[in-house]
Length: 77
View (cartoon, rainbow, N blue to C red):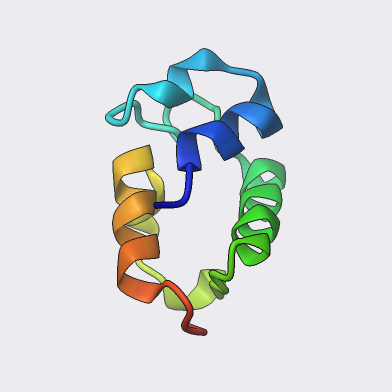
């Protein structure tokens, strides 16, 4: 499993990313800059996502991002 919370913590230095149910968008943790950094980090782990082709609702929580990764790991969307 890709350590999504750890990646987000490295990017944001915000410990609330360790709560898998925190709304990352509503809380302001995940903004456009952070999203780009997250996608780049996921590519380093072999997950290639195209933001225009994914369900953005899955980006709201760490749990949702993990679902997205599980669904599309090693695939190009």
